[in-house]
Amino acid sequence: MAETPTTPPQATRPPGALARAAAGVVAAGLVVGLGELLAAATVPAASPFFAVGATTVDRAPAWAREFAIGTFGTADKAALFVGMSVLVVACAIVAGLIERPRRPYGGALLAALGAVGVYAALHRPGAAASAAAPTVIAVVAGMLFLQFAIRVLWTREGRSSSQPDMDRRRFLAVLGAGVAVAVAAGAAGRYLADRLAQVLEDRGRFRVPAAAVAAPAVPPGADLTTGPRAVPGATPFVTANRDFYRIDTALQVPRLTTADWRLRIHGMVDRETTLTWDDLAEFEVVERLVTLTCVSNPVGGDLAGNARWTGYRTADILDRAGVRTDADMLLSTSVDGFTVGTPLAVLRDGRDALLAVAMNGEPLPLEHGYPVRQVVPGLYGYVSATKWVVDWELTRFDRAQAYWTRRGWAPQGPIRTASRIDVPTPFARLAAGPVVVAGTAWAQHRGIGRVEVRVDGGSWQEAEPADEYSVDTWRQWRWVWDVSPGDHTLEVRAVDGDGTVQEEQRRPPVPDGATGLHSCPVTIVA
Ligand SMILES: Nc1nc2c(c(=O)[nH]1)N[C@H]1C(S)=C(S)[C@@H](COP(=O)(O)O)O[C@H]1N2
Ligand SMILES: [Mo]
Image 1 (cartoon, rainbow, N blue to C red):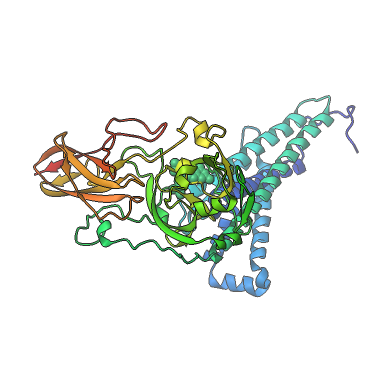
Image 2: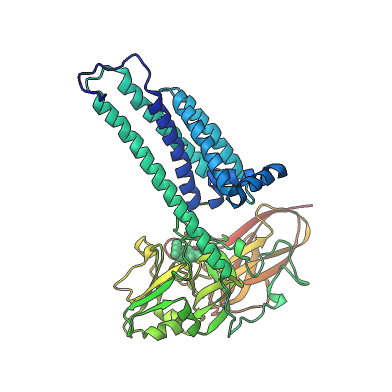
């Protein structure tokens, strides 16, 4: 019978078991749904539900696995997930039934379930501590929801309300909102996870095109990690993809397949053009080593990396669209809406500006721009190195502003001459005698002319440069120091290929790159 305002409220009985159980199930649904979404957006293997499933499969004894395959055949994974779901729902019902206002017994049960998810996520191959985050956040959200829903229920049943219908509606609204969020989060999480699977499959199939113009080989004399002049601890000349610094505004790495990729070229052009992936095959494939640097790199910092890039000349692609003479900026946009403004003069002065599809012989890693990114020797990344690029607008610096320029960074960003001491490390304690000091220096597209070192503010002494690979890559150096015991400070400076000495005055990265000398205090013991 429907409750009417004249029905006396049931003040003495606890809220109905069905309502409490429903609150528990919705709370658990929130944990699973939010966990799914947070994991899919960050570390997919950290999804609590799937991590537990995968761990169960990995740890199940052989007889259990054989039983499952024998009983369910190819549906064995589906059977596992159904079994897990039944278990979760059962726990959720119990959680709802035992939760009390200000006594989160049910929440504790959810936390215990969550602990299983965290354990599984942390024990997936290669998992970092951050793999715990999606589950922890989702469990806290589920616990808060359960407390809130139960409090609403108790309020409804516990006071002598004159409006029980309204209180019931309030509880149903809370429940409904929980269901909506749980379902939306779960669906979004599944979508993102599927999308990632598609992109990984696409990347797995991708064959790096053979270069018509190959990059010259790296002479052994350019790399201080090998050869007779090798220095233990030196920075490798070519940075491995997994060690390459990563900087971007993407909360979630964009997931773009080659099939979905388009490059729309418009604005001040003669022919508006939209390139598909297959259209790229018309352009000559070029391979180049280029050192990228972030404008935010502090003096002595490691936001610089050197890789072998394979791709197509930016200039060739621009020529196809026909750039109008009054345009001076290429405004590029990534699939997630990040923008970069690059001076056209730089892109067309003959340097190897590329639309790169491969990094060190591999398809671009997702976080470095898969399937396509820009690489421009000589410019900081924020004005040149658009990852996941999908749109090129030809425009003018007096009309358009890109992402970081709008936030106070300089519109043009040529890389400043910089040098770094990599060996020894700061505050090292070293034995007296000859000490080998080594490091890196860069002044992309001008090249490094020489590198100098000084001790305790004394006179500059010329370091021994490694072989130069090209003006677009960093250059290594070493210096043998015959030193006596005590505390000392090493400093380094570079002189670029034009003969300009590195700026010594210390300034922060904003607005156009840090300046100042890298110094390294060390203690020499007798
Ligand atoms: N789509 C996109 N591309 C981007 C960025 C970004 O935030 N989003 N950051 C730029 C910056 S500031 C730098 S320094 C380089 C870094 O490239 P990497 O992460 O491959 O080292 O990417 C550039 N390209
Ligand atoms: Mo950057």
